[in-house]
Length: 295
Image 1 (cartoon, one colour):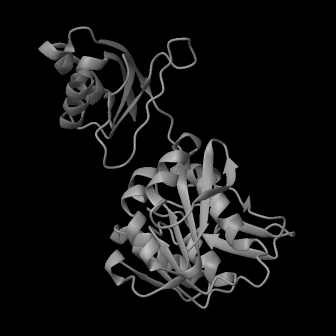
Image 2 (cartoon, rainbow, N blue to C red):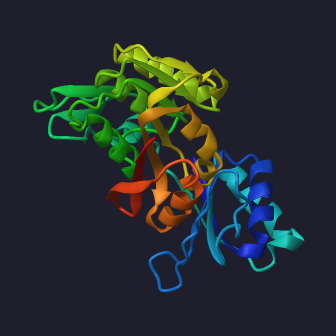
Protein backbone atom coordinates (compact mmCIF):
# COMPACT_ATOMS: atom_id res chain seq x y z
CA UNK A 1 0.00 0.00 0.00
CA UNK A 2 1.04 3.61 -0.54
CA UNK A 3 0.34 6.75 1.46
CA UNK A 4 -0.22 10.13 -0.17
CA UNK A 5 0.48 13.03 2.22
CA UNK A 6 -0.85 16.55 1.67
CA UNK A 7 -0.71 19.89 3.47
CA UNK A 8 -4.18 21.44 3.30
CA UNK A 9 -5.54 24.78 4.61
CA UNK A 10 -8.78 24.71 6.55
CA UNK A 11 -10.95 26.15 3.78
CA UNK A 12 -10.02 23.34 1.36
CA UNK A 13 -10.09 20.41 3.77
CA UNK A 14 -13.63 19.19 3.12
CA UNK A 15 -13.27 19.35 -0.68
CA UNK A 16 -9.90 17.58 -0.63
CA UNK A 17 -11.19 14.82 1.70
CA UNK A 18 -14.28 14.24 -0.44
CA UNK A 19 -12.17 14.14 -3.60
CA UNK A 20 -9.76 11.58 -2.12
CA UNK A 21 -12.65 9.28 -1.22
CA UNK A 22 -14.01 9.64 -4.77
CA UNK A 23 -10.53 8.75 -6.09
CA UNK A 24 -10.70 5.36 -4.32
CA UNK A 25 -8.58 6.12 -1.28
CA UNK A 26 -8.79 3.16 1.11
CA UNK A 27 -8.74 5.57 4.07
CA UNK A 28 -8.35 9.30 4.70
CA UNK A 29 -7.05 10.70 7.99
CA UNK A 30 -6.57 14.30 9.09
CA UNK A 31 -4.26 15.65 11.81
CA UNK A 32 -3.04 19.02 13.01
CA UNK A 33 0.07 19.93 11.02
CA UNK A 34 1.01 22.28 13.90
CA UNK A 35 0.86 19.52 16.55
CA UNK A 36 3.55 19.76 19.24
CA UNK A 37 4.21 23.41 18.39
CA UNK A 38 2.97 26.66 19.96
CA UNK A 39 0.40 26.89 17.15
CA UNK A 40 -1.27 23.57 18.04
CA UNK A 41 -5.04 23.84 18.52
CA UNK A 42 -7.42 21.47 20.31
CA UNK A 43 -10.79 20.62 18.75
CA UNK A 44 -13.70 19.67 20.99
CA UNK A 45 -17.20 18.47 20.25
CA UNK A 46 -19.91 16.01 21.19
CA UNK A 47 -21.87 13.46 19.13
CA UNK A 48 -24.78 14.98 17.25
CA UNK A 49 -23.41 18.51 17.45
CA UNK A 50 -22.06 20.34 14.40
CA UNK A 51 -18.36 21.07 15.07
CA UNK A 52 -17.38 24.70 15.28
CA UNK A 53 -14.44 24.14 12.92
CA UNK A 54 -13.74 21.52 10.26
CA UNK A 55 -10.11 20.59 10.76
CA UNK A 56 -7.26 22.91 11.71
CA UNK A 57 -5.81 26.06 10.08
CA UNK A 58 -3.03 23.81 8.73
CA UNK A 59 -4.03 20.17 8.33
CA UNK A 60 -1.97 17.18 7.32
CA UNK A 61 -4.03 14.77 5.24
CA UNK A 62 -2.95 11.17 4.77
CA UNK A 63 -4.66 9.01 2.14
CA UNK A 64 -3.96 5.31 1.70
CA UNK A 65 -4.04 3.69 -1.76
CA UNK A 66 -3.63 0.08 -2.88
CA UNK A 67 -1.06 0.94 -5.57
CA UNK A 68 1.53 3.68 -6.15
CA UNK A 69 -0.01 4.51 -9.54
CA UNK A 70 -3.36 5.23 -7.87
CA UNK A 71 -1.72 7.56 -5.35
CA UNK A 72 0.15 9.40 -8.13
CA UNK A 73 -3.01 9.68 -10.24
CA UNK A 74 -4.93 11.10 -7.26
CA UNK A 75 -2.21 13.70 -6.65
CA UNK A 76 -2.32 14.77 -10.30
CA UNK A 77 -6.12 15.00 -10.35
CA UNK A 78 -6.17 17.08 -7.16
CA UNK A 79 -3.48 19.45 -8.42
CA UNK A 80 -5.70 20.37 -11.39
CA UNK A 81 -8.68 21.41 -9.22
CA UNK A 82 -9.48 25.03 -8.31
CA UNK A 83 -10.02 24.12 -4.65
CA UNK A 84 -6.44 22.76 -4.43
CA UNK A 85 -5.04 26.29 -4.39
CA UNK A 86 -2.97 26.72 -1.23
CA UNK A 87 -2.52 22.95 -0.87
CA UNK A 88 0.61 20.99 -1.61
CA UNK A 89 1.66 17.37 -1.87
CA UNK A 90 4.45 16.47 0.56
CA UNK A 91 5.09 12.91 -0.52
CA UNK A 92 4.06 9.42 -1.59
CA UNK A 93 5.58 6.58 0.40
CA UNK A 94 5.18 2.83 0.65
CA UNK A 95 3.46 1.61 3.82
CA UNK A 96 4.81 -1.57 5.38
CA UNK A 97 2.28 -4.37 5.69
CA UNK A 98 1.28 -5.08 9.28
CA UNK A 99 -0.81 -7.54 11.20
CA UNK A 100 -3.56 -5.00 11.94
CA UNK A 101 -5.53 -7.38 14.17
CA UNK A 102 -2.50 -8.03 16.38
CA UNK A 103 -1.62 -4.31 16.38
CA UNK A 104 -5.16 -3.36 17.44
CA UNK A 105 -5.25 -6.00 20.15
CA UNK A 106 -1.93 -4.80 21.56
CA UNK A 107 -3.57 -1.45 22.39
CA UNK A 108 -5.95 -3.09 24.88
CA UNK A 109 -4.25 -4.50 27.97
CA UNK A 110 -5.91 -5.76 31.18
CA UNK A 111 -7.25 -2.82 33.22
CA UNK A 112 -7.40 -2.88 37.05
CA UNK A 113 -10.57 -1.36 38.53
CA UNK A 114 -9.63 -2.37 42.08
CA UNK A 115 -6.73 -4.50 43.26
CA UNK A 116 -8.81 -7.65 42.64
CA UNK A 117 -11.34 -6.58 39.95
CA UNK A 118 -9.97 -6.37 36.39
CA UNK A 119 -11.24 -5.86 32.84
CA UNK A 120 -9.41 -8.38 30.66
CA UNK A 121 -9.61 -8.56 26.83
CA UNK A 122 -10.38 -12.08 25.67
CA UNK A 123 -6.96 -12.48 24.05
CA UNK A 124 -5.15 -11.84 27.38
CA UNK A 125 -4.66 -14.16 30.34
CA UNK A 126 -6.07 -12.66 33.57
CA UNK A 127 -3.34 -11.53 35.99
CA UNK A 128 -2.94 -13.72 39.09
CA UNK A 129 -4.28 -11.03 41.45
CA UNK A 130 -7.58 -10.79 39.51
CA UNK A 131 -10.27 -12.55 41.57
CA UNK A 132 -13.15 -10.97 39.65
CA UNK A 133 -12.83 -10.31 35.91
CA UNK A 134 -14.90 -9.12 32.99
CA UNK A 135 -13.66 -10.66 29.73
CA UNK A 136 -14.38 -8.22 26.93
CA UNK A 137 -14.07 -7.75 23.19
CA UNK A 138 -14.44 -3.99 22.49
CA UNK A 139 -16.30 -4.71 19.23
CA UNK A 140 -18.08 -1.72 17.67
CA UNK A 141 -19.40 -0.23 20.90
CA UNK A 142 -17.93 2.17 23.45
CA UNK A 143 -16.78 0.79 26.77
CA UNK A 144 -13.49 -1.04 27.31
CA UNK A 145 -12.77 0.07 30.88
CA UNK A 146 -9.83 2.22 29.79
CA UNK A 147 -11.67 5.55 29.60
CA UNK A 148 -11.84 7.51 32.89
CA UNK A 149 -15.64 7.71 32.78
CA UNK A 150 -16.06 3.94 32.46
CA UNK A 151 -13.36 3.29 35.05
CA UNK A 152 -15.08 5.55 37.63
CA UNK A 153 -18.47 3.90 37.04
CA UNK A 154 -16.98 0.43 37.45
CA UNK A 155 -15.21 1.47 40.63
CA UNK A 156 -18.50 2.85 42.00
CA UNK A 157 -20.27 -0.44 41.22
CA UNK A 158 -17.53 -2.49 42.92
CA UNK A 159 -17.25 -0.37 46.06
CA UNK A 160 -18.58 -1.48 49.43
CA UNK A 161 -21.86 0.37 50.11
CA UNK A 162 -22.74 -1.59 53.24
CA UNK A 163 -26.40 -2.55 53.18
CA UNK A 164 -27.20 -0.38 50.14
CA UNK A 165 -27.67 -3.05 47.43
CA UNK A 166 -27.72 -2.33 43.70
CA UNK A 167 -31.17 -3.93 43.37
CA UNK A 168 -32.82 -3.62 39.98
CA UNK A 169 -30.40 -1.79 37.65
CA UNK A 170 -30.85 0.27 34.49
CA UNK A 171 -27.77 0.91 32.32
CA UNK A 172 -28.97 3.68 29.98
CA UNK A 173 -26.65 3.96 26.97
CA UNK A 174 -24.97 0.63 27.62
CA UNK A 175 -22.35 0.65 24.82
CA UNK A 176 -20.42 -2.61 25.21
CA UNK A 177 -22.54 -3.59 28.22
CA UNK A 178 -19.58 -3.39 30.56
CA UNK A 179 -21.43 -1.52 33.35
CA UNK A 180 -24.46 -3.80 33.09
CA UNK A 181 -22.23 -6.87 33.27
CA UNK A 182 -20.39 -5.47 36.29
CA UNK A 183 -23.69 -4.72 38.03
CA UNK A 184 -24.87 -8.29 37.45
CA UNK A 185 -21.59 -9.63 38.83
CA UNK A 186 -21.80 -7.41 41.90
CA UNK A 187 -25.20 -8.55 43.07
CA UNK A 188 -27.89 -6.71 41.09
CA UNK A 189 -31.21 -8.49 41.29
CA UNK A 190 -31.81 -7.82 37.57
CA UNK A 191 -30.26 -5.57 34.90
CA UNK A 192 -31.76 -3.80 31.89
CA UNK A 193 -29.12 -2.55 29.41
CA UNK A 194 -30.49 -0.20 26.74
CA UNK A 195 -28.94 1.82 23.92
CA UNK A 196 -30.12 3.70 20.84
CA UNK A 197 -27.47 1.86 18.75
CA UNK A 198 -28.49 -1.68 17.72
CA UNK A 199 -24.77 -2.57 17.42
CA UNK A 200 -24.33 -1.68 21.10
CA UNK A 201 -27.31 -3.87 22.05
CA UNK A 202 -25.81 -6.77 20.10
CA UNK A 203 -22.34 -6.24 21.61
CA UNK A 204 -23.85 -6.12 25.11
CA UNK A 205 -25.69 -9.41 24.58
CA UNK A 206 -22.55 -11.14 23.27
CA UNK A 207 -20.35 -9.79 26.07
CA UNK A 208 -22.91 -10.79 28.73
CA UNK A 209 -23.05 -14.35 27.39
CA UNK A 210 -19.24 -14.51 27.28
CA UNK A 211 -19.14 -13.53 30.95
CA UNK A 212 -21.87 -15.91 32.06
CA UNK A 213 -24.29 -13.26 33.33
CA UNK A 214 -27.94 -12.64 32.52
CA UNK A 215 -28.89 -9.10 31.50
CA UNK A 216 -31.75 -7.87 29.33
CA UNK A 217 -30.42 -5.89 26.32
CA UNK A 218 -32.73 -3.80 24.15
CA UNK A 219 -33.47 -0.40 22.65
CA UNK A 220 -34.44 2.37 25.14
CA UNK A 221 -38.20 1.86 24.84
CA UNK A 222 -37.78 -1.42 26.72
CA UNK A 223 -36.84 0.34 29.96
CA UNK A 224 -39.82 0.31 32.32
CA UNK A 225 -40.80 0.60 35.95
CA UNK A 226 -38.57 1.67 38.82
CA UNK A 227 -34.90 0.90 39.35
CA UNK A 228 -32.87 1.03 42.55
CA UNK A 229 -29.79 1.98 40.50
CA UNK A 230 -29.77 4.07 37.31
CA UNK A 231 -26.43 4.25 35.46
CA UNK A 232 -25.80 6.55 32.50
CA UNK A 233 -22.31 6.98 31.06
CA UNK A 234 -23.07 9.14 28.03
CA UNK A 235 -22.08 12.82 27.62
CA UNK A 236 -23.13 16.03 29.32
CA UNK A 237 -25.51 17.30 26.64
CA UNK A 238 -27.71 14.18 26.38
CA UNK A 239 -27.52 13.74 30.17
CA UNK A 240 -29.06 17.19 30.62
CA UNK A 241 -31.84 16.40 28.12
CA UNK A 242 -32.51 13.06 29.79
CA UNK A 243 -32.70 14.46 33.34
CA UNK A 244 -36.49 14.06 33.82
CA UNK A 245 -36.51 10.61 32.21
CA UNK A 246 -33.57 9.16 34.16
CA UNK A 247 -34.88 10.52 37.46
CA UNK A 248 -38.36 9.16 36.74
CA UNK A 249 -36.86 5.68 36.33
CA UNK A 250 -35.24 5.86 39.77
CA UNK A 251 -36.99 4.29 42.75
CA UNK A 252 -37.33 6.45 45.88
CA UNK A 253 -34.07 6.26 47.81
CA UNK A 254 -32.30 4.71 44.84
CA UNK A 255 -28.95 5.63 43.28
CA UNK A 256 -28.40 7.84 40.21
CA UNK A 257 -24.89 7.52 38.73
CA UNK A 258 -23.90 9.80 35.83
CA UNK A 259 -20.66 9.96 33.84
CA UNK A 260 -19.32 11.40 30.59
CA UNK A 261 -19.06 14.82 32.27
CA UNK A 262 -16.08 17.16 32.11
CA UNK A 263 -15.05 18.99 35.29
CA UNK A 264 -16.09 22.33 33.77
CA UNK A 265 -19.61 20.98 33.13
CA UNK A 266 -20.37 20.22 36.79
CA UNK A 267 -22.60 23.24 37.42
CA UNK A 268 -24.56 22.66 34.20
CA UNK A 269 -25.50 19.17 35.38
CA UNK A 270 -26.30 20.33 38.93
CA UNK A 271 -28.74 22.91 37.50
CA UNK A 272 -30.29 20.48 34.99
CA UNK A 273 -31.06 17.91 37.72
CA UNK A 274 -31.97 20.40 40.47
CA UNK A 275 -35.76 20.08 39.91
CA UNK A 276 -35.51 16.33 40.53
CA UNK A 277 -32.55 15.60 42.82
CA UNK A 278 -29.29 16.98 44.19
CA UNK A 279 -26.24 15.88 42.23
CA UNK A 280 -22.74 15.94 43.69
CA UNK A 281 -19.28 14.91 42.48
CA UNK A 282 -18.36 11.44 43.73
CA UNK A 283 -15.04 11.01 41.89
CA UNK A 284 -12.77 12.68 39.35
CA UNK A 285 -10.15 11.35 36.95
CA UNK A 286 -8.12 13.01 34.19
CA UNK A 287 -10.49 15.98 33.81
CA UNK A 288 -13.69 13.89 33.99
CA UNK A 289 -16.08 13.60 36.93
CA UNK A 290 -18.56 11.05 38.24
CA UNK A 291 -21.76 12.58 39.64
CA UNK A 292 -24.21 10.75 41.90
CA UNK A 293 -27.43 11.39 43.78
CA UNK A 294 -29.97 9.61 45.98
CA UNK A 295 -33.44 9.78 44.48
